[in-house]
Image (cartoon, rainbow, N blue to C red; front, side, top):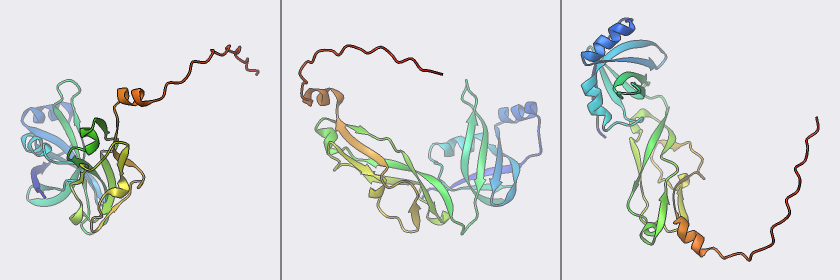
Amino acid sequence: MDHFVLHAFNRAKTTKGELNTFRKEGKLPAVIYGAGKDAANLFVYTHEYEKALKSITESTIITLDIEGKKVNVFVKEHQREAVSKSLLHIDFLEFQEGKILHAHVRIRLRGTPKGVVSGGVLENPTHEVEVACDPSVLPEHIDLDITSLEVNHAIHVRDIPAMEGVKILANPDTVIAAVKYARHEATAAAPTAEATPAATPEAPETAKA
């Protein structure tokens, strides 16, 4: 598991103009909350976070080095400017060691399904699942091998291999991935119905008050 460390430092309440000045200096405003503590305002270095952002997920544990004090957190969310997409703010969630936490873990599909090789289309409606576990065993992602998946077959949450200490909270019947016939093939395979006379449309009913 990759380990990410971000250097941070405390900040006092600042005005909008002051925050913009700090952003131009490469300091990204952030807040950390959770673990039964009051929220605290921070800055992190923008370049460090952007580098980590290429690899982290919602379930990646990050160590914040806050002026020498180490705190383990998750990224709850970050905000970007609507037009330039530049980073504006980060929310960090601190957690308590040894306490069960809930998190969403990304699902990664591996391989090319047999059904796709034979002309089917892969559908992937579910990209993550919620789990409950101790932070020490929280997976960053779940890899599923889908090479054996045939047309008109699916992989469900219940098919995820058991992970020691990790409880999956999602509905076991939820479809993660399925292979179906391409639309034009399904249409060609369907029997052609005999033409029937069109029914005379009935006049719409008038609702009464």
